[in-house]
Length: 428
Ligand code: CMC
Image (spheres, rainbow, N blue to C red):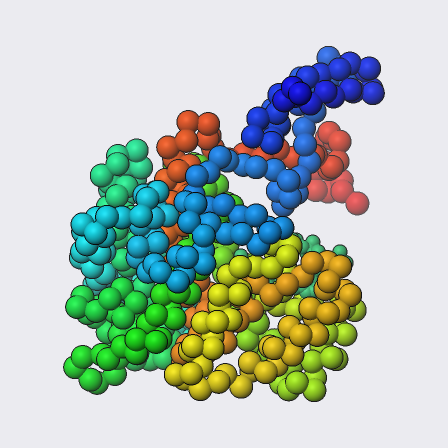
């Protein structure tokens, strides 16, 4: 067996041997396939990158048919059960689980960087009272590039590390301030005696009490949710992070773009859309009618379907268990029954079965967030905080990959052939 692909161009009758490595052929190897001397060579056409690998990566492994997700080789189920978000973030960014000493110093570094510059606070105060927190989040991340010009030193390892610490540490603070801004309450300063998650809850929810008391069950649930959202290989926002970062801009500017990609309802905005959909359905009795409308093409069942997972989303399984644990503390979310009924009907309906549409990570996460008292507009932000680990890791991998260049897809031009300019008074 030889690892090559033999290609016959029926336009010319010529044959080509294209090497196959790691299950892929290089798209540029096709450029030698020409129909004549003026032909620039064969390209592939792949809108939405349905079958194109844009990088080699050692970070996250997904087998969509088997429902497998691993960070740096560790199964998501084990990490969700035994790790914490901060430890998982370290694993994703640095490639190995930290030793006890490394974990301590990682936690210390992160704790040292939780505060925001006073001028960042002023910037955030300038947003309208009803500004969507995700809009505030992505704008503030972008503004960071003006506060930390050393971030431009992207090939300096120490400078990169500094931005890693800043980003992981400050995104919860931005998120909490965006939330407090939206409800017209004063910002809470970080409390560095609390855990990463405990401090986040403190910045969000502390009122007049001197010390915020963290519910261990909710703290653990949020930690698990953060682990599940920490990376997901080459999804839309990560591709944006890599694509923007490939121009060698600083990581804050690149991450503002990644967060913008996440904001959309087909990506990280889906958890918000699920809750709005469940509210709109209103009661179990309306579920069959809603499914009928989805099948007729009048909208989508939000929180269902995935480009990669075609059997189930392993994150959704874990989230369902976490939901039960949270509801024991908070009481059941009344929308849960509608969600369960939607899932029950959809999983046996021919439309969803033949299209391999299963609940994804966003189907139940919103119900948990709502039970924890987060408004729906905060849901995409709660996705962005942990995904920061994945974005940074993928960005750094791309920067250091000698095979990478500025991202620049090709196109198939379908516009007008060359024509001459017509003065305005001559146009009909
Ligand atoms: N409800 C109803 N029909 C659907 C859905 C859905 N949620 N998702 C896909 N389909 C249908 C679609 O209409 C198409 O049918 P047909 O072949 O008859 O035209 C078929 O399934 C294939 O869909 P597609 O749009 O080609 O699939 P895709 O891989 O491009 O889209 C997706 C993936 C996640 C964008 C899509 O499934 C979707 O819109 N889901 C709802 C939004 C959502 O929950 N997004 C969160 C994704 S997971 C978290 C994350 O990573 O962001």
